[in-house]
Image 1 (cartoon, chains in turn yellow, red):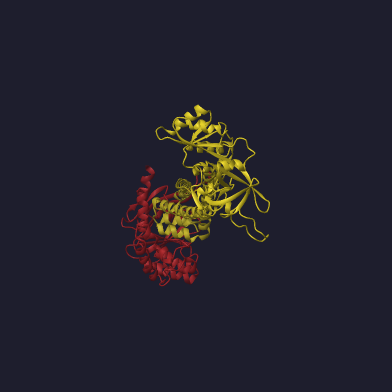
Image 2: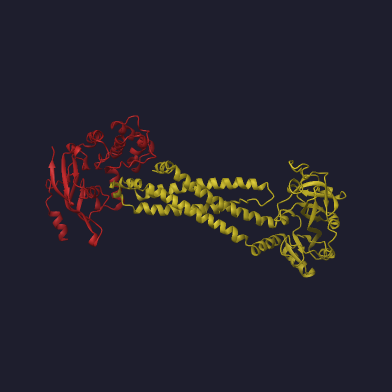
Length: 387
Length: 247
């Protein structure tokens, strides 16, 4: 009878497509929104992830998250280096600076000043040029998204399109010359600003109006002790905040969660997706069953057991759930692939998210099926004799 | 208790009752609703249908014909009395056994055909076999043979919407007979058909359905087909008023 159940389902094409559409939309909302939320969360600490070599971040005690810049005096670096358990410590400048384009427009960019000697904190993936090219005078490395996007050379004519920055091009950074010596790939940040890498010393020149320049001290802890203990020791000795990379990611993420309404907004959309999905799917599936009630009564009269009828309805429900979810997940994956190439947040499709949303869809179709099964099982087979 | 004894000892109006009867009902009562709105659909009906017989139940609308065949077919429980189907008291069987008995031994033809629109003629006719666990391919093959015997050879793959009313009812007849049931119950099988088509359906039904091991009960008020009956039970106000022998 399973094939009969499926033929009944496919036979009513309008309702079948309607149910599939309902589940597809619910799936999209329940996958895309949390996926985007996870992506935004990841972006809040993507810079910490990118700078993978050091395992402790030292900063002003008032810093609340990665983009909250409260610079230190350069002398703090030497104090940190003197703490027991610190293998090495290097400075890092992180701040926003203006880049003037050839058409006069200015673009705020994220300027990163790396330790001159080691270049620790630099991009992991170079697309053009070498990290060591930063030792060339006035040199900078620009991230790929910035080079192709907001820092691209403006078109000469109104109808033309901007030309991506390439090695050898010159930028005007805070009214100073900056020679592009490389293009790098970096994870998207929450601010979505272009990222410009240079040396710490040169960053001081570009941002010369600031008295304190040391945003972070990047520390590599010795392996002899847990890094948490060394971080606590740095805090005790210097009165600066010292957090392991994981702790700093968590702190940045918590700041986003507790100081914005992002969870509530995204959560509400997901809830709406679930409720609308359940309502539309439930209603349409129930209507489909009502339309076929007479035939279920015929099956009952002809000797179909309750078990058989239950299986038929469950099969129909699970199938529409499976197809609708498949289309929804596929559409979201396509959307995620498109978003992946943009500067904005993409959609992070983890297996946990797919499993959770799949379970939510399964719950919706099972709830719909249960209501329909109840209706069919309570049906009096004798109705088949009514004209 | 007294009431049950009274029912058991009451003489059957038709032949006095025979233990080999296809259908043997005694003192069947059935009411719908309760209190002031209660409607007595059956008021102590006695009925016997013999194997190999075509019995028609006739009477005005609302006289209880459909309720009676629902009880006979085991899809509605009577309030009082008992009804045996080839010696089997369906109301005393557990629900799942009653359902299984119905699936194996009873065939149905409905006034509104009740063919599933998205299934082909052969698939519609195969449904009782599928319910009894026969694999789809085998069931459809068997159904196609029966469709040929009701004059629908070559129309196995047609959807109900591609068939005329008479053809649809012949598919329904094939569906009622495909699993070789012992009792075939028909509710107004010709009321939606014109005279010529109705007669053709009845000829097919009588030819294929009636044999020594099988009985046919038809509810109708279509006087055009009365001539096909072996006996006609006239019902009125929930009771059988008289039995008319046609053979």
